[in-house]
Amino acid sequence: HVDDHSPLVAATSTAGAYYGVLRTLTLDPSIDPVALSKSMVRELKAAGWAPQQTKDTTGAHVVALSSGQGSADPWFLILGGDASVAGESVLSVQLASPDIP
Image 1 (cartoon, rainbow, N blue to C red):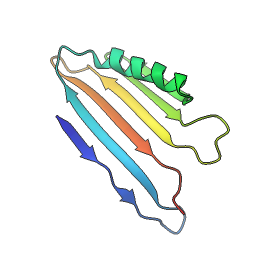
Image 2 (cartoon, rainbow, N blue to C red):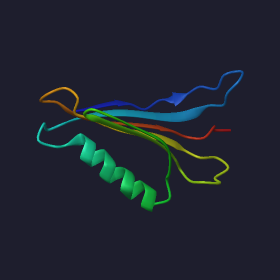
Image 3 (cartoon, rainbow, N blue to C red):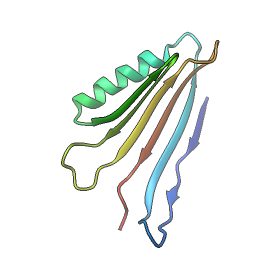
């Protein structure tokens, strides 16, 4: 199952508009979401994404990345794998664009 929320976020008086994606994927319980998220992070790093922060807890792995060091207008990504609830396997993806002029 995929729960998808992908809006264009309107500009405010203090911030520009941006595009945001939030997807939560409920996986088959036999899939290890922590191993999957770690594998995805390895691929993203190889593609030039830069990890900014990582948090590991029992049954969960969350990483914040930006689209590259030195980029004037980076994209931001938060990727998480969560197996903290027995019998459930969840992967979450949150992506935000730079401000849209």
